[in-house]
Length: 233
Image 1 (cartoon, rainbow, N blue to C red):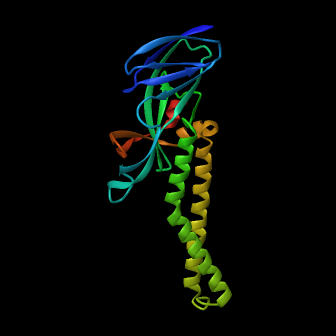
Image 2: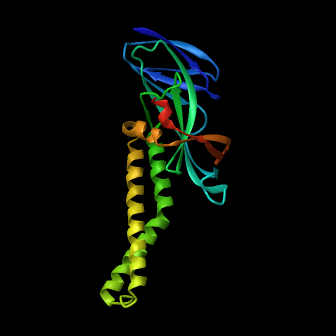
Image 3: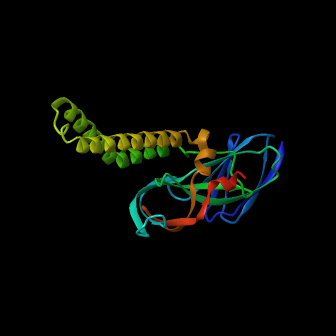
């Protein structure tokens, strides 16, 4: 058995699960636990729902119009999985990242570094991500289906084949849309396996600053072009 001091530097209470036990550490508080050597700890925030589909405002400095973008996004509070190993003191802090401009993801860091892995808090969070992804992808899939049927119809009926440039333009848009859809599906499958891909997901995600968070509403902006790779350096 080993003793670990855990300090919670988050702005909310966190729960720590280990073995068949658990403890709650208030914001700014600390506690000491005793666990078997190498035991895994699971840490998560105790504030509100672990996931929400929110109306959001994001300041996009890469957009030529330089403005706030208003679209629905998923706010996800992940669970941090920590293998105790040689740790005798753990300081917990929070960082927030944006994955694929879809998911605003809160992760709990351990002594300024990433935890061993991150995961959905429960199956409900995963289902909510699937629902969000489906709803947001519908317009793109509808466009791809329309372009595909239109291109196929041109080939069968010969319409627009005489105007070859129009046909080639429509076919090119269909190909580009298909590639975007395939890339989107690949990214979503990767996120659904968060526990296995958490390092790649966080490393490739830019850090953001959460300015405002109320019920079903968030407002955030990029944080000096940082990304999660620094948590693994």
